[in-house]
Image 1 (spheres, rainbow, N blue to C red):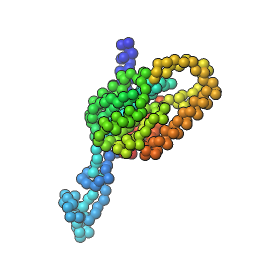
Image 2 (cartoon, one colour):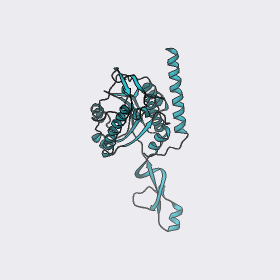
Image 3 (cartoon, rainbow, N blue to C red):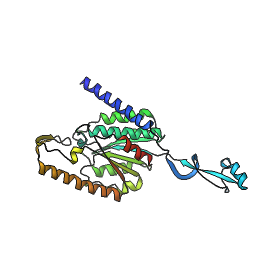
Image 4 (cartoon, rainbow, N blue to C red):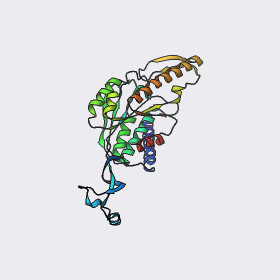
Length: 286
């Protein structure tokens, strides 16, 4: 048991080192608001207007043009980021890498990006309840705390209540935020984020194992459902595999339609992928 714990801690430490290196070794853009004001990024020169700050006057251009000109800048804005891993029993699966572990790495990448950009982040764990995981912070230690709590969270026999999640998050997140929902997003018939996405900017990150969408022909196998703890005999013959593929495809198309109608961006990451490139691309678009 001690050996397993030490191994788990080492894996977590290596994951955090990798995630931090990925974020801080790449250029992550500033979050610039559309409001023009005092800031770091130059936008344009324009003629002086009453009320403009004289310290932004461009005296060289003004003297050449014979009339006063001021520099206009983009004003940096601070994002409020909420990281929401959806940890049900179904994420305790992976052919090479558990979805639970991948979700944790995705959360760490987002959190490190927040630290890099000086944006505050908080996190919640959701399934059949919504629990505050870490309080709002901009500090590096907050990333480790977030990752440790997710890594140690027991997902077995946990199920997702989409209605409860939407309702509780809507109530608890009072300030407009950039919200990342991260999970495998199976069985989303009850998922309705229309009201929530009107209040917040929402990004959905779907984490999957390729086996779930394209199972191998394994014949008779014993499986245990990590969401219920119940075991059953399953025959993964050609007919069963095609049926599973068709069902997952149909449910995913309905999910995508829901998200698009709500104006929610989404990406999918598989357990055999390095998530850094996709996550940093999302963060740079904010």
